Length: 554
Figure 1 (cartoon, rainbow, N blue to C red):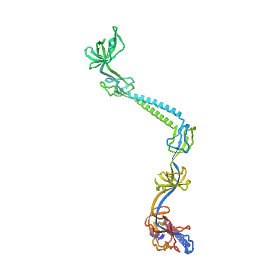
Figure 2 (tube, rainbow, N blue to C red):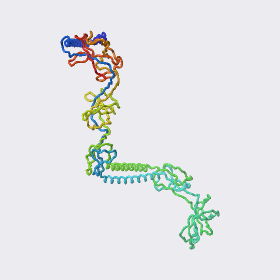
Figure 3 (spheres, one colour):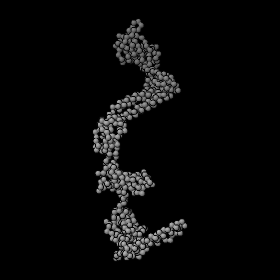
Figure 4 (tube, rainbow, N blue to C red):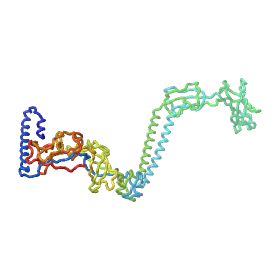
């Protein structure tokens, strides 16, 4: 068994290549020399030879249930949860600074107020500039709207004086709109009789030539007297009638109001006949109406286009936007004269006080958020795969000897840093309960990367290469002497399946039971020769093998 067993399991090797044969020979020679030296040392140091008793010993132990915890150890420097250095964005005299170092402040608490008289003046100017720009924009928009030439009265389009493609100047007549449904007639009446007329009074109108009579209504009575030929004193009275269809602006008529008759006939006029003019210049783009169409007041008759007006509107809009931005900048600047805390925290230093003059960029104070502490560990690339967010971290600090704090991994960064061919990755740990710890302290941290609770286990050195464990099979023997293979009497190797492990113990998932007695080599201070928990050489020790009983375990 032992080393010789491994040689037997190896079988007959395939003939090596010529270049490797010399190396194999050298290895065999070295192993042979080591074996000879080992045997000689064992014989020399064995009790029977009278040598030293400080030899490699088999330690006896029992398979037990244990908690196997694997940890990684790193260090770091504590930092606050958040920190902020308040910097001045403006210059001026500090009017107030009502806080001191050590004070606790809340977000948006006022720290400093600075003289802002110049900024207030700049804000007023910016407001005036914006108002002027807005007025110019409104005027440009109105001019743009005037490209749609609208009728100023309801009626019929009797004359459309432009065509598509024509250039139109400001004030040019583009159409005439007439309302011929109602006609007005202005007639002179004796002044003393007309003085008694009232608006709304009925009148009887007689059309000259046809003698057709129409009912009309007094709509206006002049307050001034007029002298006609023959020294007739009259007042002008306006009468409105509904046009039956045949009356034109060339038709004449007389009228009576009550018992009073007019002094002479007059000529009908259309109630509304308006010439529509262009308010802006441009080119006729379209004509939504035609001659003879009936339109309402405000209806578009001609549509003009003008690149100049469009450019003016766009330019005016840009000026409004620039003025608005300038005003906002002035408002922001004015706000900068009241300096507030950006975070909840504790004032750790204060460099400016009331009465001091600030320059832009001055560092006024520093605030730490101490609601929790953090630190960063630089974890080796060989260990980083074992670290995950949420893992528990045990923390100690030289400054607080004997105290242990608990943290948790909150971030595992993949942005590694390579130095000297070795890559490390930053891992952030958060400490919520940090009473006594302060930013800047150096701490040591142990990260629990695996835990196996209440599992069968043996010392790591009890498992030999090939996952073999030396197990006691004969409880009657004293196991004080070695057998022919150098093993304790009553023991033999058993193959096991292993699981989690740490520096001291390894989990056994199959092959052993709780309470099984095992043995493994204990290395002395003088040194001994063994390989994977199994002694070198084929013979036992002269004088027998000593077994030491372990009292460890849980």
